[in-house]
Length: 128
Image (cartoon, helix red, strand yellow):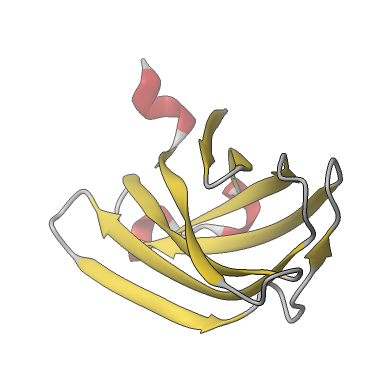
């Protein structure tokens, strides 16, 4: 698990390889990641957008942008936590993701960016 506090929001990420949804013979590797966002600020925040940078170990790179996460734009009160699960497919046995969330201070209406820590996605056999 990796975590990072950025702009008063703590991001924790845990990844899991999905062997049943992967097909190594076709270079298809599926991973699930669970993200927890905890608001350490004294004001409520709203997550508006996400921006991901995804890297395969063969040098392939892609970006994914969009509104909210898993179809919602959560509001997180001070001291509260929001969690969600999503997935990413890779063409190689190893890769990594990082990115940013665009968030809003709901008291001041100010937009700000929260950094998502880089996290690795590795097929378990590669650890040996």
